[in-house]
Image 1 (cartoon, rainbow, N blue to C red):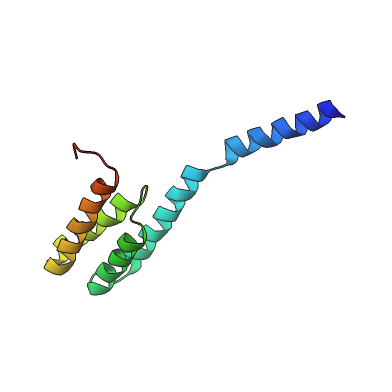
Image 2 (cartoon, rainbow, N blue to C red):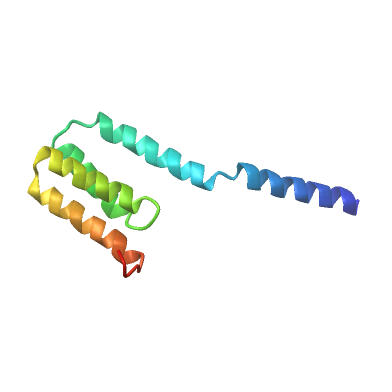
Length: 102
């Protein structure tokens, strides 16, 4: 009985290790949000959505993605307000990593 329970415990552990997918879920989440962003009209609606996402995701792994997306989109649309917000969120990305060289 002990061997059987040990076998089940090891198989469940290896199953969760192989198919846990923490990083995969993060990638899927980012990709699904990117599809939503692409479907939005290329005006202040898209910039507003990107700003909300950059505000909500201020910690890794999604912080740099949304901050850079906001900054790049605001440059494309020539919107100085959102360009400054994008630069601010990008600066906070590097500040929160506590890396003095960045």
